Image (cartoon, rainbow, N blue to C red; front, side, top):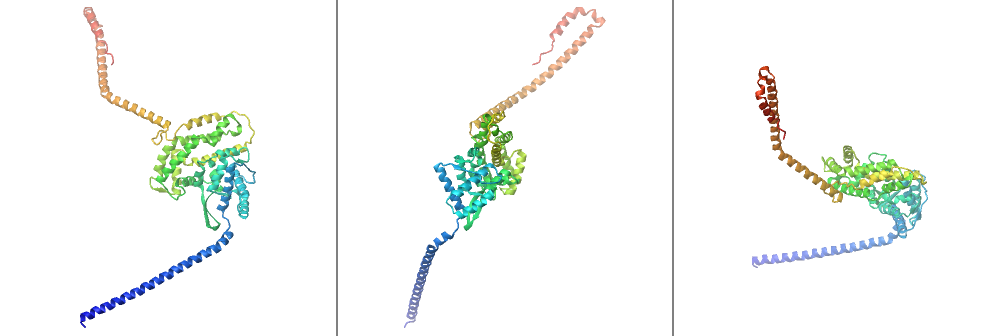
Length: 471
């Protein structure tokens, strides 16, 4: 056989062997894949069987979490709101707390006693809450529902409960703000994580037993519970903060309504100290908000692009001291003031008596401040007040401009006028000297004899040389 034929035949044999070995490998791989697929299917079936078999057991043995109990209380209160029923509360708490916290605590205990939650965990919670109400915490939905209950005036406790309908913490435009600034993460049984606002956090804001309580609250409010506060975030959140407070001071609110009532009603509603404090807070906010924003932005972010709580705290003290105001603390200050006012009303009792007081003065001052816009004519605001301020400012600037232009034109004329005045004074002085000299000459004996010959013409010359009138 030709060597070339042998080589060609050998190549064909090798190619055939390779193709057959590749086919065997493909078949083996295919079988392996089929086996793996079957194993996966079987494993899924086993998992599903286990879940079906053990799921009921897990549901039965799993204890209810705090958030689940709170959801039951929330649903119970929501039904009461929809049906417009009235809740009659009695005090079961033997502790000293601000009035609104006492009402809230009794309301939550009432909800736990009447909801359909697990009795064992409810009993445990009731025991804790009655012994120490500061352990009470609320989810966001429960807190909002309680606020709606107060705003709907469905709570009947005593004659002062009606005032909670306009209390700052329960207002629809502020309850979310307080919750977002005060909530903490809480882990309950079953590793369930939830956002909770506690009586402890609210009570700390009211009592302010530590200096950094309000600073921490404001930092969380502006940073939205983040660890750092950036410049853009500060500007955006401060603008929202300003708008919310401006609406608060402009529209009806708890203290302003009671000031108006105390003008015509009773001594129990009047409190000079609280009214004065409210006026100071309102006046400070209305007068210095925009100046404060410029100063705070400069101080806060002059050396850094973001702030942590420690740096924010030290800079806040610095800015407040320089501006002689506490704008960043206005919200907790108002909550504290309203709580003190409620406690004052409770302590004064309910006997109504006419009394002469200065409430009318406070009411007039509040009405006057209400019309003052915090933007004070800045371009960011287009209210009538700011438009009027801008027009007045532009008019004043135009008037000043015209005065400057007139003075510039009068400058050369003034110089010439001054030169003429100097010449006039010089001539007057010379004339007086000459007149005096001539009179002395005529008094001389040798001249006196011949004076009659030219005295009359000389007198006429002197009369014609009267002092020149000033321009």
